[in-house]
Length: 220
Length: 220
Image 1 (cartoon, helix red, strand yellow):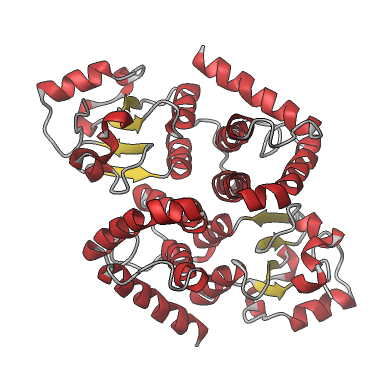
Image 2: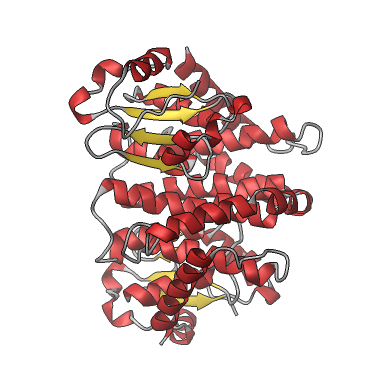
């Protein structure tokens, strides 16, 4: 059962919900300033945010909604995300606050918790470029059949060229941009098996392997 | 004719290109640190960035590419944006640098040039949320026919609800989030005339009018 977490005083129901969540870092969460909760669901775009949270050991609790039961459309959750979608992030406490869109959540968590998040304005802008590229350009090109045939090979070739010169999306260091880009790239063989020929892009395939290793390491 | 601008020493060709561009604020650009150039094209997503540049009087020159002549696929431009798309931003000078994805360009310009850009981390994250929402969620839902019928009315209703309580995307102040969101909302009647019924969303329509007024004021 989905239990609303924010804007409410702590309750036994709430405590149970937290206890059931995958809270690995609750010791770092100060009750006085509230908790940070990620609402997610298996096989949703929440998965990439969960991976990133584990990877940077961010003090964020994960609550999985049962979308089969429509918990993402419940009045309680619509108060967190009026669009009724996961992932959504919520900070409880005296000034509760929430955020949706996986790309915005990733960037916010990076700024707040990732010690390796670059200070350089150009690098940060490039991280944002890749997050937007993954969520908008790549996703639309892959998921719209007309674009998939006409434009996806060109995008993948340009990505292949990029990864012939760079280890990760922004230079040589793994960043939050790789969480978004790597995840969306992984959707292509998952959603379109046999429909998109990925074999010509050896540098891109090597990059996707590097990203998978990172993902596995974060889950270990 | 498209003239490559970056990574090259100044030349007469380059000077001509700058003279031809809509450079309203070149006086604020220091030659010693290089120029900032937006590559755009009429009726492209570059238009929203041009609007924002005018709105905040950012010292950015605009160079329109002739896409009919394939200037966005020229080797010179592919050095600026390997994906061959506009808009793209380039900073020339000793350390030339470029950025693509309209949403990332908007956010970068906001951080760098918009005196009203909020310092508060939550507000900035919400700006990013709306930029991603416009580019990813709203665009995909509007442009994919299957989603347009099933999910667009729900999105528009949730937006209508948001604008029943807020003047702009993030609270009461016009921000760069409204440039992205307002522009993408404007695409709906433009691309799907008669296919999407916008009449039920009175608060959303009022918001779109407020955004149009802003756009007109920036162009005046």
